[in-house]
View 1 (spheres, rainbow, N blue to C red):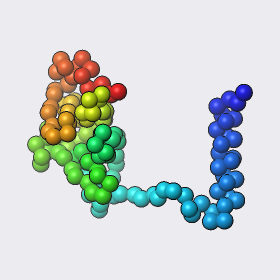
View 2: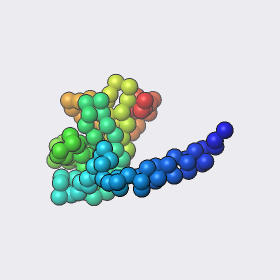
View 3: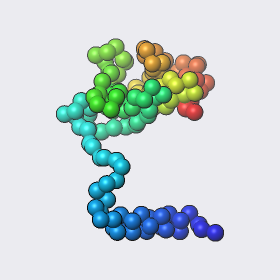
Length: 134
C-alpha cells in the first residue's frame, strides 16, 4: 500500500515524465495562466482571501476594497459604495449561497446576490454562526 508521500512523489514523477516526453514540451496543456494587477482593476496588489459564489463570480478581499471578478473585469466595493470600510479580510459562502465578508474593523457583511447588509461583530446572529461556511 502506498503512503501519501510515496503516492505524491510517484504522481509527480509520472507527470514530469509525460511533460518531458511530449513533443511540444507541455505547450498543449488545457489551461492558460494570466495575472491580473492594479492596472486591470484590482484595488490593491495584495489579496487576503478568495471565494466563489454560486453565480460564478470570484470575490477577493483586499486592504483597498472588496473586488468581484466576472472573468473579464473587476467591480470594486468599499466606502464609496456605502460599505463601512475598504479593508477586508476573510470570505465564506454559506449553504444558501450568501457571501460573508469580514473586515479589519470587526464588521461582518453579507451579500445575498442583490445587496450588502452589515452586522457588527457583536451581533447575536453573527456570533451564533449564521455566517458559517458550508
